[in-house]
Length: 79
Image (cartoon, rainbow, N blue to C red):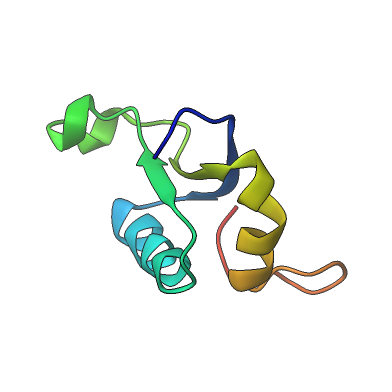
């Protein structure tokens, strides 16, 4: 991923859920990153803010659409 402004599109309770969402974005050819404050996975109990899924700012609207979010509709993800 080149140097671009990143935004959080979803926050998950587990890394597994974040990885599933990331694979959905990958299938739609949207680059994404997962960020969690858990010492690189060594201490998963340390994260308190959840596991964040990030995309480039210019891809955020499309990523949100791909992940199934729309105004007035319950989001199936945890955010």
